[in-house]
Length: 235
Image 1: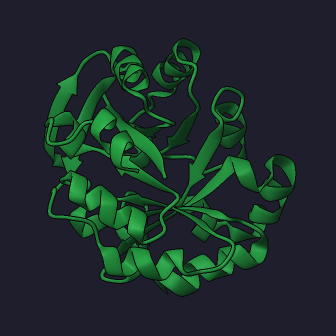
Image 2: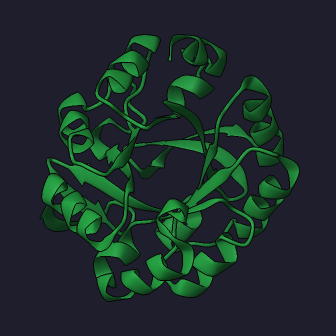
């Protein structure tokens, strides 16, 4: 299972939100590149870099994200506000993978073109769910699409990698939504990255036992409840 620390950026700083609420924010660093190097040196497989300002439509941290990519040797996957082909192209010039969510649901007709251009290994579909329904636009809008049928529809198009975030667990350290995760991991021809609620080593073991391809480490990592080194030892 891949160990993937999250670096969430807002106003150029490394932050963590609770349930995606920008009003419920903790700032952890004003040096994202230093943070990236720290997690790389600790043994991370990949970094999950999120542009929260782009997600919320309030700005962009793309220059900083590019700088992160230039200063580390492990892959990065970029998420947040990738809502047109141009920005996806820009990101994939320096990142290994682009994570798309809102675009995938609002402009599904362009997905075959994106898939043909970049291949399934460079695109991650973000399926953020709240109460079993997929949400988009920075988690502000529900699609009324149920999680499992939603994932299955993208598998039929040829996509295989998915980021599954349980919104009501994100930033809470209340434990992951193992039921949703297990159901998603049971879908054939998928690689599921689990995100939201990780609070302990036991949680990472539970996620692995569900069959997850990777686990996103966020608040628990920043609050030193767990370490990358500890997680690596048990997976």
